[in-house]
Image 1: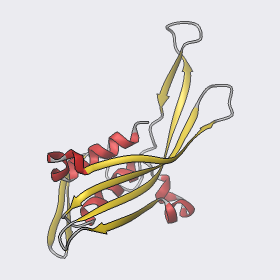
Image 2 (image 1 turned 90 degrees about the vertical axis):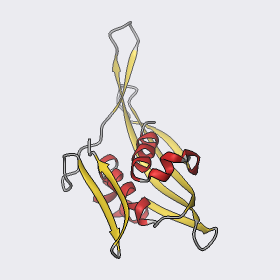
Image 3 (image 1 turned 30 degrees about the horizontal axis):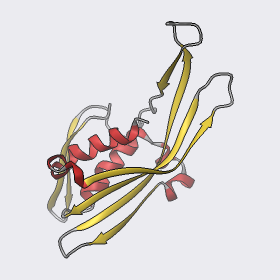
Length: 163
């Protein structure tokens, strides 16, 4: 599965404090399943809930949600396009540790399609290809600098690359 590491990279790029202290960003998968496409190939799809834990977080939660949703728009756009998925695709819990910090748990429903093709190296050899998601149709398609503001306070800034 490739999406957890991709999302980790996006969040770390958007939240420098997680880059400085990577142990504060934890991820795990619950409820995972594998679905074969029913074709004569071995192609399949992973379906799972990725839980992201941001520990001892002192910033504004918008600074986590905005890059997560930007990432999801590129890598799991069906959660925006499908009204049924939109209702339950992203949810979170928070435990307030003090007046300044919280542990935040965010769950996101993800899928990853894996194509199976014969590989030229030997008879019976297979090449497994993780299929790219289709690009979003409504957001910019070139790299740019993003900033997020809440009530005139800058809560996050990073370089966004939609590729």
